[in-house]
Length: 382
Image 1 (cartoon, rainbow, N blue to C red):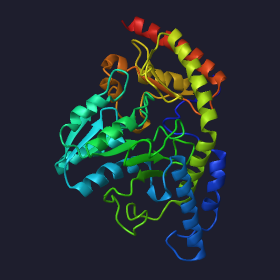
Image 2: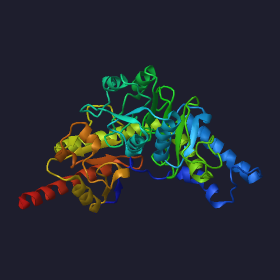
Image 3: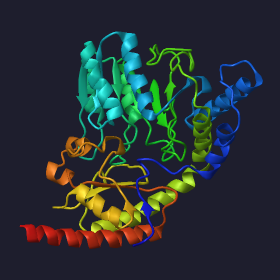
Image 4: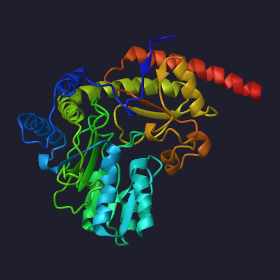
């Protein structure tokens, strides 16, 4: 069996050694509470402030716009539910491609009298402006469209959609969790009022996220208490994770362009091999993140292939890691008009900085072998 190869970087990434180094003092030495006035408290506060600047710099925002959370999921929930609670009731439109961290809180708003509209996708996995414009003819208070899809890697025209939402006086939120580090992300240029980020997608620690927020937006907290994070996210801060998040943002900016070029080269090599094996590659005609390939083979169940490849030493997934308990076909693929039988066969490879061409070649060899074996089993069963 070849050495283990990790191809699930959209699920989570390895902690960068420099990030760990930045975090270690806040894990191994006495730390103060960042709200305390003594020297230990001031040291903790300074560390958080520096991380806030690093996160802000990575996305072209002001440090005062960064609200630290425990995850991208919490940031999404704070944006959706926090704005909704401030408005009282209204109408929200979310794309049919959203991660559950957006779609589920949007659905929950129905219990509080909100109307939920779904923005349709085309067959390439793109939300088109005319689909949103049709919805905005009704008075819409909030719109949420993710910047880059976690399954297909397809990049949305959030700037254009945000401009349209603003024209109709709707608040615009984007989940940029998968985009950060893999493409240029600039808060102001995206025409959004709120943007969600996550640390562990960019070689930072798990347990840290952020909501970038236009300071003119009225938003209610999800957690009440001591008033941390401008009163929007009470609770003693996870200093080590926040420091790690800041360090990861700085590294992502410094190493971004060279890394993206290499990831795109690796993915192209992978997809050349996939096409030789007659794979269907989803979203291939749209602009995508450079590291993501989502594909299927006729007559092959995705979960079966995932487990077979795992035994061969390759960690891939059949969709979103955050909804792995769901055995239904990918809602993203169904929204793109993919037939359920094909969607059930979907496999995602998401590459990272630690992957190389030898791993891709070994993967393609193992994949061909497993496809041959599974098709023989299917033929016998029939």
